[in-house]
Length: 274
Image (cartoon, rainbow, N blue to C red; front, side, top):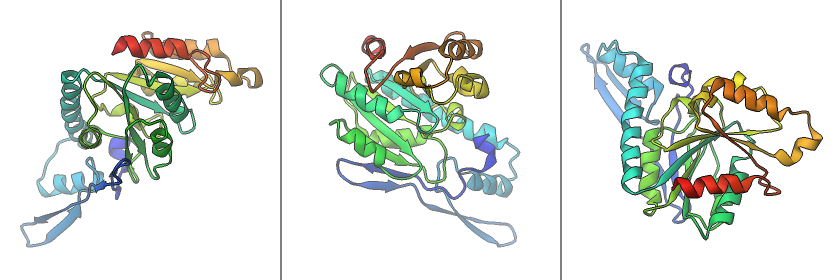
């Protein structure tokens, strides 16, 4: 799992406000002196940095599970984020998928179609570049870019810092586009109201049973690119059966951000949920 595999080693999170161009780096050094006089300096360049946690564990002789420690810290901040959203009547969605499933395309279409009904702000997560954030900015929506470096997911602390830059208004929607990954984002609560997994018809109908943790953790599954169904071998009914097998309560929308098919139901859900 992400919390123990070390995938975040040497990562450096950068949060960029595309409106102002200001960038904030999460990078500072920490020093310990051991009993024998040895000085160890290490960088906390990721809020859940694996190496830093291991050094602390060794120095302080802690026996706490690294996984429990990381997730407990994350869940505490996530609870604070959730309270922050609730106090401002903000609907926060955590959008998760594999790379190329169509998150950004669906997001930009949603913002453009609902801009006169809902105020939607975006936190965009990627390992590198601000390419997707720039596409979202073109809609007129306010967007904050979080680059995770070697990290493979967003976490609650990143969202907390991103919200300070984003400053979304009361009674609005915050869309959090997570890093493209069907594994690690399922483990980390961001404080969102709803987890949304996006699956494209080009990925295969068995994704829900191949990556059950993601689909079990999600409240909604959006099946995208349905305009391509006539041209590919994809069993929609079987995909739905697999998703329900893993998570009987999951709500499913079938949409095409290209043609607009099925978007009415998705938009209705958004409007009612706020």
